[in-house]
Image (tube, rainbow, N blue to C red; front, side, top):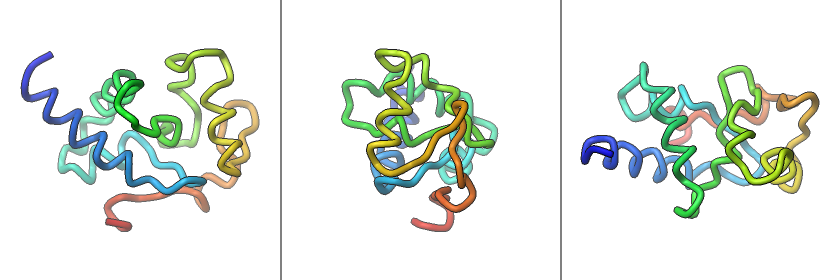
Length: 109
């Protein structure tokens, strides 16, 4: 991994750590906040590499509220279980009340 992507990943982790319990955001919202609006996929890669960095990656979903990163968690339902333990309702791999629970770092920070 290059130094540039490592620095980007660290910035992603800093933002992700600020997502409040019971709220969710999207890969694209984090990318936009960091000034790299077309880097949603890179945010996803950062989340895939965050398991040992104390990052609540389960709170980051796609722009439609779908748990697209769930296969990167141990066990098939861990991402959903973590969200539900915070009071987030998930049905068919999608956040219910997504727009209500959506945390936009560009507006919140």
